[in-house]
Length: 91
Image (cartoon, rainbow, N blue to C red):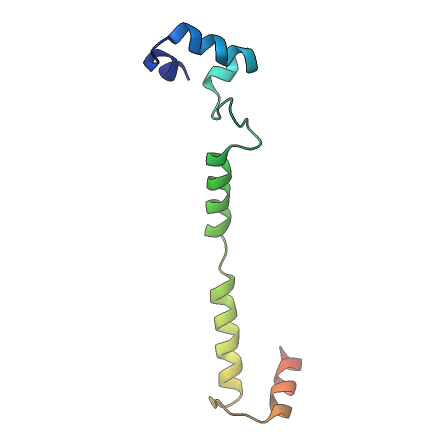
């Protein structure tokens, strides 16, 4: 924020506006802006979503499970319905 204040056309007024909503000195070095705040910062939410998505591998796990099931059923596209039901019980 300090850098942003210094880049503004009127640094003093920019600081005053900022201080109306977040007056503490610690808020000037916070990793969020006064527009959205820490709980609804679009940049933080975006990063949280990216972090969450990076940990997901559901699609790969699902494909691996279905591949195994396909192999168990003899690598055949058309199979007996009873065999599929039995295979589902095994999983």
